[in-house]
Image (tube, rainbow, N blue to C red; front, top):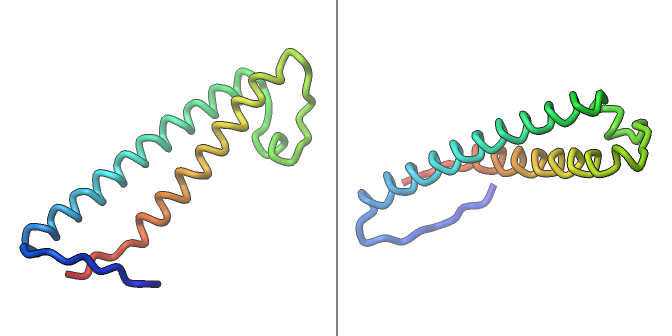
Length: 96
C-alpha cells in the first residue's frame, strides 16, 4: 500500500472533510450497486436466464433476446466496476 500526502494549512478542518467525502462516495457507490443489481435481477428474470450461464456463454442468443442480453451484459460490467471502486475505496486509510 502506498501513501498519498495532502498538505493543508488547516488539517483539523481538512480531515473531517475528507472523511465525509469518502463516506459520501461510499454511500453513492452502494446505492448504485443496489440499483444495478435490481436491474440485473429484473432483466435476468424477464429473460428467464441464469446469470452464471450467461457469463459462461451458455445462454442461447436469438434476434429477439440479443438487445436485452447486451443490456444485461452491460449492467454486469457496470456492477463489476462499481464493486471494484467500492473495494478500492474501502481500502483507504486516513492517517492524520
